Image 1 (cartoon, helix red, strand yellow):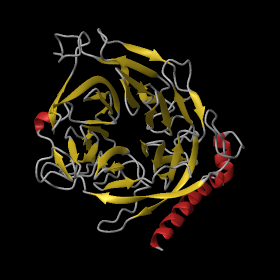
Image 2: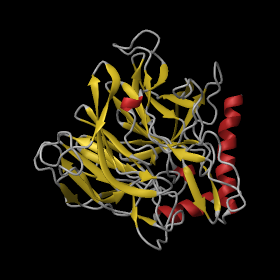
Image 3: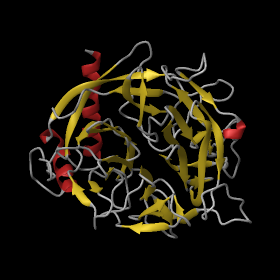
Image 4: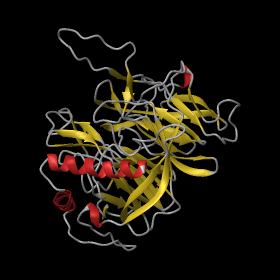
Length: 436
């Protein structure tokens, strides 16, 4: 009975927000989609649907709580806007905002100082059945030693991806919100342990780079809050924000979103960034997935919308990105991950007519039919209460294996718009398929 109340409340909250900004759910979503078509798509053709009530509904999946994030001292660590990557079955959290310790004190000039700062501390989760985990580390978070910390201590919104047995980290914001150009690569000391070292790499051969002596790889221009995927020898870096004076961006007047897509072949020297077909629309704070040599991007925000419904996909080598069916609910900075033929999307953030908040949303994209469903899942309340799993932002959906099952982890994040980091870790055990 309690779970039914949680789901009903979620639908009411979304409707209340839309009414507050002057729209009904049907008319607003129809306008955003630009189509009144109904139905489920077939393979090879995307379908358009007018409003949330028209999308197929499926049930399945269970949310539970995992161990809370903890810092080097063993204290709970609230964190958001971090990078998250799985390497050798370990889950890595890189950068992000954490509360300043001790908290900054108010002054006459700054009576409400910003209480968060970027961090270089790298946290790692070792799944319970990890084959090489030392005794006592299974099912726990640990802070890696200083030698494994991210080289820049105040970074957040880093674009990180697993690539050829390493973690490649591109750009990100330094300090408050300043996109950067540097590229760092993390190599584990061995596949059996999470510790390792970060380095900059030479353009000439991808070996360790000595700044000032060698030419180190960097981005063509500063970038943050985008997405990256690995395909073969190449990394594709997509979207995000770039510097721009007097920008119309609703969040930051010094940056704007970009449609840019670039690729890097890390096995061809000297390494060189290549321009690829741009997105159909600019987007940042979005997520990407790869399947069968096709890249899919979902949600995000830009200067027109802070909660994009439209999706698009692209096969490297083709001339342009392809429009996909709009999601039931637009969102950004949400939890998203692919498991099998299904891309799951939960929660996220929005800003509309000066109303800000997080969305209570559960939706899933079925890749073969290129169509969305609305998802109803179960939320466990014991031994830890997993409520709130589908209404947070500023974290990632991390696909990982534990106890013989592929799951989605949402570590940290924030329960309200802007900055409100948490140490809670939510874990989603997906249903078998999502075709319905």
